[in-house]
Image (cartoon, rainbow, N blue to C red; front, side, top):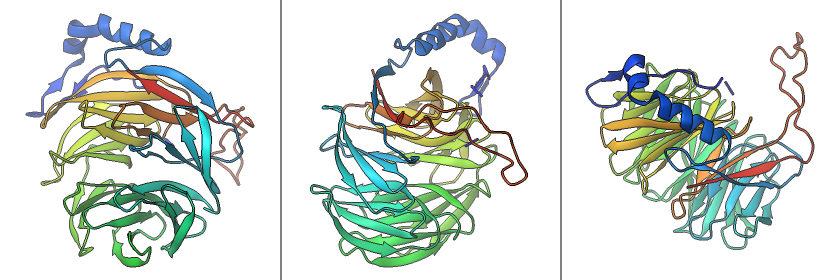
Length: 363
């Protein structure tokens, strides 16, 4: 995961307009300071979003992606070897999906009443029943399946295989492998427009790939400059606009038809997830430095920076409930970072046992 954002200006979609620092300060410096202070204390800022709950779940193991089931509002959380199922209403863990070794992500197929996981260490995907949470199938993938999405158009789940530079297509009805896509680089996350197009960001090449969900043929590969090392990816499917989280502290907006980067806004350090809420027009970037950046889609060609909300260190992945518009992040408390060694030049701090927590942000 790659400092709090300090940039004052923001590139705004539409005609390549760049808001200068002096213009931004002259127009809204006092408001921005007030918003950041409000965010830091948990009070609502310009967007209205603030932390309304912190629910400690505890348990061992790390975590990665989250997903919300809009029908039940349950939150699915990957936890190293299993998936926790959390009910925000009761604030309790109400289920568990075991035997998902190295699980990274969860994809839900409401139309099929099924869910799928990407099991990184096992190089597999577990298919489970969405109601009972019982395993109903398993598919072998290529090496290192990381992110996973479900595409209702093709009725397939797609794992993004980091080490294999590929995507595995899994038939949603049978759980069998339908094919493999050679992506030409290391995939990080993906998004579907629900019209037959799958988009994937290549972290190692700073590119965006577009392929056909049924034929599995790559149609375009586009450079994402000035975005570097893209991680999170979301989509405004109605207007074919991609929302990309970049490790050089940018959230980029990309035309899914032309591949053109049509604007950026500054974000924090260590982004790992992006989401777009069509109900509010907000685009989000969650970062490991403990910030959540919110931009607004003012029009299909114009996004503007709204604010950056203080969350908690390590809260780098998120999910959004499109019905309630609540934002969920997870993190834990950490100890001191060990000294670097030859064997481990970039050591990570150890998680304090039993401190794993769900953060709920509401308006």
